[in-house]
Image (cartoon, rainbow, N blue to C red; front, top):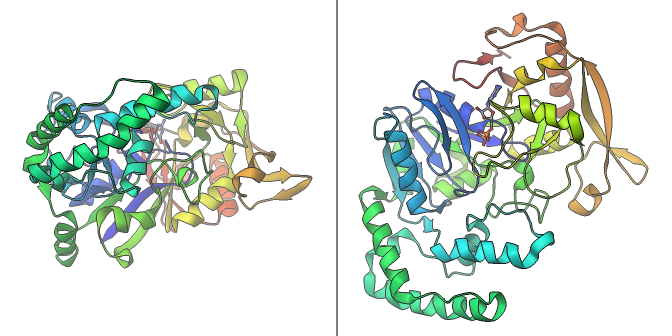
Length: 426
Ligand code: GDP
């Protein structure tokens, strides 16, 4: 069976922890989109890890970890990450890389930096990992697939062709040093040496695995609201964050994705620019940020402080719908135990009218939150294993949100560890 683990919000919902937990019963874990621009934080018996490219299943020895064709593959980052986990005594994971995955080129990272510099105050808040230039080139058909590393003559010819265009932009738009073709070729040969042992026809591998009845997890990055089509365009990421894209980014039939576990955080956080209706500021935000996640809400890749907000029913209802949610995993609930009262955003007021439908970006920018306040539970809920043992006000918070979003919360995560999970039989 194929299951997807995806986010309903702006990312950082705790997908890594849920994937790591579900990976116990999985044979294969596939990353299907995104690149090293976002990260998952995982806490397990080996320690605490920030993964950017590797799937969250790499800590088990029974799983195969796959980088699908939809990923923006940064080969040196991948290998640094493998080393960072094996250095901490995690056994060398079984890794496969799609021959159709495209590579982040060194110049993609430079172009990302140069463009942010050029835009100055009007930037998108890019992590400068080269992701937007990478996907732009992919769709402009001047990207480089892993498979192209194995035909050196054709590769040289293509590098020459692509660099003509890149160097014109470098010289005339950014006024930066030009890129040398020989150096680019040599870098790609280094990448080839690193990646060669892992390259595989991933869609064929997965086709066979599905036929053999293997359990496959598709692991998404970021969340619904960062999707380029359905998110808060243009403050979005450059590849689709939706479970549906899992079929494309892994190369499997769409009808094989039977379960879509959408991860929803018990409060909101976001990174980068863009409308964030339930955002909070000042001391209130600082306290939630400091207590949030596991050791504070700071970006796993950049260390940037995340923007904080109350739970947003409007955004989450939409985020779950657009994912095609079958199950909601409700995470980081333990963090809210300090609050006397917990505000929840239950509607958006736009031009004097209240709606619970998530609007397009221009309207979203005008939206003001309609808040409802619920009593807190003022208790540490970590360690609780059964739903009925949760404090009454905590259950009321969960059940109110479940009703508002309209999708079943079947898992409640009450701590960062694998075993901090309450399975709710519905
Ligand atoms: P992802 O990108 O969706 O995997 O999210 P991140 O890893 O960036 O952020 C989630 C953070 O919350 C990480 O630091 C996790 O260790 C932590 N976390 C996940 N689930 C829980 C939970 O239920 N409680 C607490 N306190 N922390 C959690």
